[in-house]
Length: 313
Image (cartoon, rainbow, N blue to C red; front, side, top):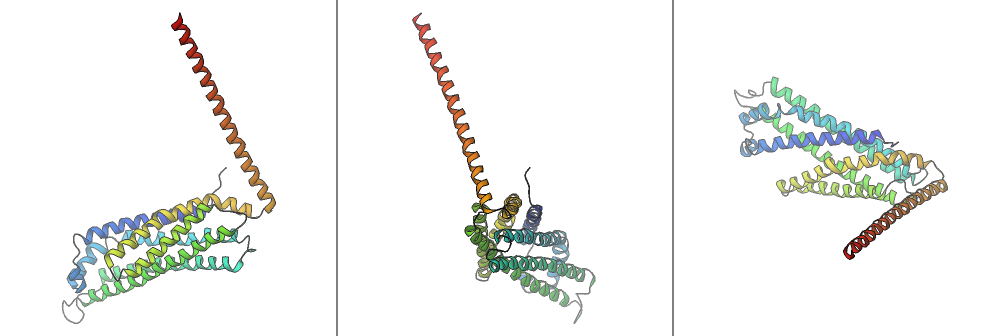
């Protein structure tokens, strides 16, 4: 019976789902920006334009955004659980490089809490701003029809989005450090509890995390280009590689936790027996193929002799 770790699968499903919905949200925003968005009127804080944008685009599309942030918060919360288990196994139950692995665990917990808090903060902010846009008087503050409230609303929305942007950017750095340290620990761990290819995939994810973080910084040099690079890196990691990394871990983690408590000599003997079984199985398969080949060759020779006798007669 194949055993799996359900915390890994839950985290993978949640992160995949949140990023799938995020792609739908980005596609909707992309369509809006290429059809109805007027950058000059937005930058000049035209109150009529801002009011129309909130009522026709932001408030109606809030359901997807709220779902994304709730699922994303839950996904990062569950992400910390398998990381803690991996750290416990790689440290041999706290007996190997305790400070090193405790640092990985600290980064995992802190990063997950930070990302989940940022997602929930966005949900609360969006709900409050939507309420203001629908029910508050934002048209007449200093004078009739000055629209000052809409300007303040938009500036507040933009400032908080900038705060969350840098929280997300720092999260990529923490994730990169976590996966790189796990790769280093697994490479020096004896006996091996996790596959090297799995830890190398984590190293690739960590490299893409750095690419995303650097693109987040350089977007102020060229916003459109580096925004696209950061988006590609984020989608590759969050939508494909991280869920794949978690799914692979889900099948390795139960066996790794069992092997961790076994005696190293017993574990080595079991691996030798497994390799011996695989070798014997491969030899039997090769022998069967050779016997089948010899049988086919004998049949061909018999057919040729029959043909020769027929031609003589």
